[in-house]
Structures are given as C-alpha cells and as structure tokens.
Length: 564
Image 1 (cartoon, one colour):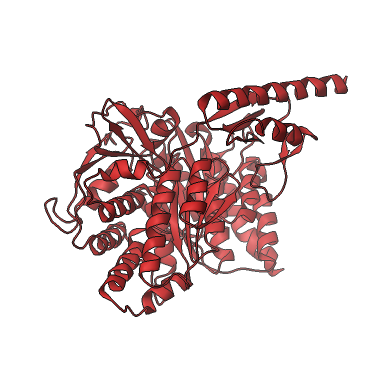
Image 2 (tube, rainbow, N blue to C red):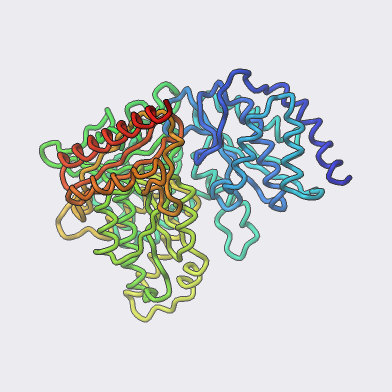
C-alpha cells in the first residue's frame, strides 16, 4: 500500500505535465547510449521531459544525492541537441539504468504514468520518501532553453529540487555534480560553483608550474562553442603572460558563441580529427602549438605544422602516452613506484604503435575496452592511476583513494622527491577526474611540455617523434543485417563470433601483412559494419581493407543464397 501511495501521488502530476510534452507520433525509437540521447532538437522535447523523471528517480534511489543533467550535442551541428544524466561522482549514468531511460523515452504520452510507476516499483522495492536533487546545465545551442523547460516541468511534477546553472561546458557540470556530493567529505572535490572550478584548475596550474614557463604561445580553436566562454573566464585566474612561473600567452579563436550557425562549422576537435586537417581559420607558423576543443569542450586535439606546411596531429592516443610517460616518471621520482599501480586504458581503435610504445618503452600495463567512454572510465577506475583517452581526444586521468592517500602521506627524502610530490599533488587538482575535459587536458599537456622543454628542440615536435603511427583507415561496409555481426565477449570487440567462420578468414588475411591488424564491428545506428585496418604502409592498409570488404560481400551473397 505504501508503494502504491508513493507512485500514485507523483504519477498523476507527471501524466498531467506530460501532455505539454507529447511524444511525436511517428518518431523512430529512441535509445540512451554513451552520449545519452542525441538527435535533431525538434524531436527532443518529450525525451528531455522523461529524462527529468528518471533523474529524480535516480536521486531518490541514491538517498537524495544530487544528479546532474547536461543538455548538449557536443560536436554535432547546431540543429541537433542531446540530453544525458550524470551520476553523483561525475561519472556516466550507471549502465543498468540506461534501459529505464530508453523505456520512458519510448512510452506513448498517455501511458507515461504507468511506465513511471512500473520503473519506480522495480528500482525502489518499497516506499521511498527521499527528496530528489538535480542540477542542470546546457551548451550554447538555441534549442537549449526550451529543453530546460521540458526538463524542469518534469522535475516540478515529480517534486524534485533543482538548480539551473545556465550555460556551461559539459565538464563543469560533471565537476559541479561531484563537488555537490562531496561537500561534507573529509576531502571535498571543490567549491560548488563555476568559479570554484576555475579556481581549482588555476591553483593546480600555479603549483605545477612553479619556476616553469611554457615556450611560445598556444592558440585554442573553441569550435564557436561554450568552451570559448569558459576559457576566457578561466584566463582571468591565470598568472600574467610575462610571469616566469606559469605565465602563458593563449590566443582564443573561433569564439563566436553568439551565432549558433557557426557552431562546430569547419572548426573544432572532431573536424580536425576526422579530416586530418587544421580548422579553416588556421594560420600558424611552423612549430607553433595549436589545439581544438569540440562544441561542449570535453574533447581536445593538438596539432602543428612543420617547415613546408606539413600538418602534424596529436590526438587522444598521443595525449595518453604523453600523460602516462610523465606521470609514471614523477611517481618514480617521488618514491612511490612500488605503492602506486599505473595503467593506460584504450579502445581497439587506438593506434597499435601507441600500444606498443606504452607496453615496451614505458613498461606500463595497457587495458583494452569496448568503444565508449563509460567503458574506459570504469576500467581506469580499477587502478591507482588510470590514464584513459579515446583517439578522438576524449579522456582524463583518474587517481584512486589509495593513490591520493599515498601522495598526501609521503615523506620526501630529498629536494627532488619534494618537487615530484608537489607536482603530482598539483596534477590531482589540475586534472578533472570526472570526465574528459578539453580545458583541463590542455593545461595538463602544457604542464608536461613545459617540464620537458629546455634542450633546444620544439617541445611539440619532440612529443610528436616519441613514436610513429602505423598507417590506418576506417571503412564502412553496408550489410543486410548488422545484428548478424557479433563479437566474442571480453575481447573489446576485436574478435567476431558471428558470422561463423569469418574471424578465421580475417586472421588469415591479416597474417599476410606486416604489423597487420584488423577488426570488424557492427554500427550502432545503421545496417553497416565498421572495418578498422592497420599495417606497416598505407598501400598494405588499402589492400587489407579491400580484401576484407570482398570477404564480407561474399559472405552476404552466400547468406542470401542460403535464405532462398
């Protein structure tokens, strides 16, 4: 009876409010994925309303802890938008709850009360009177305001308390979620405000950069997104440009947040990474450092040109190896090498040369996970220090409670150990440990390059030469049924289970090529498979992928014959 009283109370209010946010009759099924829901903004009103319901349920299930909701479509064009839930410590929504998000979003408007009550019974088991708390932010897209209204209508209907932080980067919303939930801990994550985020990062920078000054300047392409506003606010907390301890000249470009039509337009991390080219506005001189954020500032790509206008890109794989090398080195210098275990977490799309460099040169453990930040974050959190980046530039570094404890209690035995410990402690403040963060990751890279400079060679060029990427390419092949392509569990999507026999044929093909590597996985959104190929030369990559494409097409043809 108590359970019934609880669900009926809010169910009626939710049903009434939902009429103002009706689900489109002919919309395709919605699915909650790694990025939450993301689509054309015109379809998102009802979806965002249901996310508000689930965010409140999630908060109540977790004894009233604060849940974050971010409205953004990251690197997508301005016509799109998205919405995702952030769990109490700044990580992604627990995977077991994604099915509830998908169910609510696909429920016809007239049945929303019943769907809500069914999910509430499943997750609570008994009456739950916890007060729900939610915080909200959005990026600069014009559709954001209306979607916040849909979200808050749901939160009001379900009796949740909320704070709307307005326009923020995605990583700041993640930071605020953790800061809110740790405010009464012995070591709070940070001040609960946008300003607190800037102050935390700036303090870490100033400590890490004592007696260091980056060479030259850095130009930041902000993709005409919310990261431009955040970076400008942050720079007010930084040392003066001419300060010998941490002064840096940062040029901010593509910062037109007042014009939605130019968001991610021929600029930004995704444009640079997928096109292997600089943003259209690039005018850098040889060896000048440039980087690009994406639209919501949770990805970053570095790049420069060599003499002769040769474009060089430093993606997420490169950032991961730079960070792992530096952090591993200072952990040893601090005398903590036997107390702190470090690992690098990658997906199958990481370049094989980076994996080899980490394992053979850095002597660090590498873990491979399925594609998706939620998988990388989860595995990285098992280690004392977990470095994870996707090749697209989304990643961060996680420090476990054991690592933080070891760093805090360490007793330095020399000036060198003291300096290493001080730098390590600073990095725990400088790095946003909740999620990939373009601003925080940029500061991490600049700290490392400044610490490693001084031998007369351009720091960014030296970084680029640590290893040579193997040529690689991604191929899309249309198939009749993508679901017929499944992968073997616990192989990080690198081995096919079905179609039967295809993995053996693939292995035979790969064996013919020097440093060959290839895997096939189903697309998440269309009837197609993605084929990743890698080998010692571009010519070999092209040959390998062509052979695999023929193999898949022959398999499709044979399947059609069998069906008839």
